[in-house]
Image 1: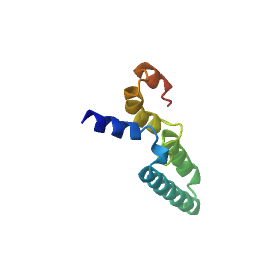
Image 2: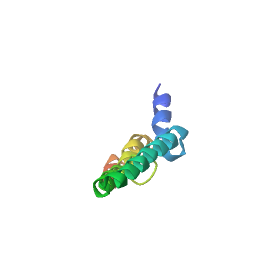
Image 3: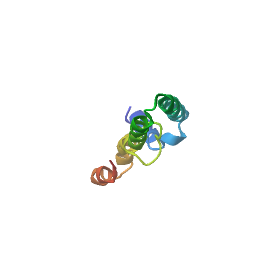
Image 4: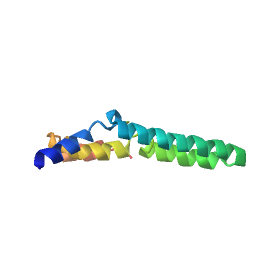
Length: 94
């Protein structure tokens, strides 16, 4: 059981290589593109760009990159692999 949990958490350490994560990223970025196209037609582009940029900075649509969601998903697997929890928390970027 512990091995299975460890393997699952270790898989989170490389989310960009996971086809499910890649599909999720692509779907979210597609939604962002649709929202931005619509925002230009409705003349609310600045507000929508601010929203989509913030969401992508946090990590939605960019899981596997250098962002809060990826760092949070990677932390348990990294700790099980011997990383210091203090280092993992201090490396998480907002």
